[in-house]
Length: 394
Image 1 (tube, rainbow, N blue to C red):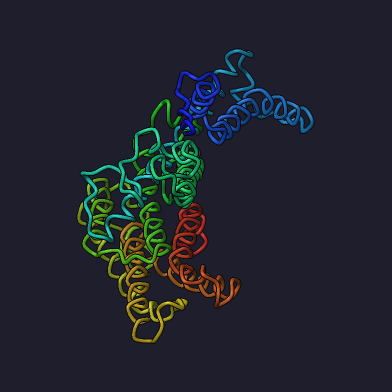
Image 2: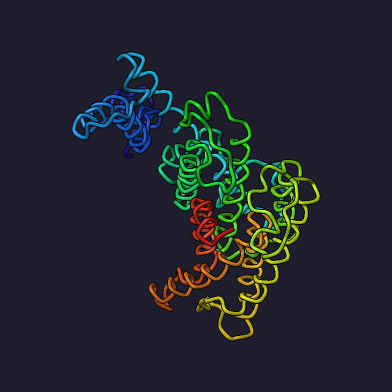
């Protein structure tokens, strides 16, 4: 009788070496994580060591008399000064990515009626809790190589892209509104010194509060766009809670009433800043946003997906698209006033049709053109708010 060959044990040199190599691979750092790390180091070296030389050379060529604080410092102090600036920019980017990760949770749980306080993030396939390392914004997705560590099924890259978009959103608005001293804010006071150091490290709390107010306003509009991409209806109760939390800041900080309710109406006298004036401004903006949003929702472009089938199944999809449009119009009016609604809503509607025409009626992205256009137009309007208000004579 033939003998059955015995199984090789872990003590076998060949098998033990194979197991050791596998364990070493599991503990190794994924190469995808090294890409952003090297990008950060390269950007830091470019900003700290290369940019001062280029700026100094351009200054010599133009023979400008303008003196920069960073160029007056000695070499070690200048590198430290610019490193602090670079770290501040990185912090704003990562803060925005963290908010984007949280808004990913909101976009997934609120339309489904699930809570957001208890219960950590889980894999959408095996329902396993995601570890803290894998749940880190941007680096977590790269660490896992876009797959669940348990079931090894792919995790959608939309989470990575949304976190990157939120990070860039926070940085762009910080550069335009916070670091510049509120150059985009109508009727805002001017500071003697501006820049990252003088607005963040020597904090201008009133400007920082205005920046946080506006960045969460834009993040909420982006949240509606995310739910539209996922084709999930956003509940009105949850949305009104978000709107109330954002608008409550305006009621207690009357200096954030940059454009008031009587501006743009001929013959109206000016009123002092007060709680009542801020409330009237918010109420007028909310009414204008709701009315114009309800009237314009019937002209929205959308694409009925093939799986919807007949017109009977397409009607709920129309209602969901119109509901999100009215929700976004309401928030724009509450935060930026009725004057902004009169400009943002028509331009967004035009851009939505233009985008649909450019992509074609059969494109899968044509169905989300309305909310994406509303977010982009509201973002551009906020970035150039003071200039637009001055051009229209308000």
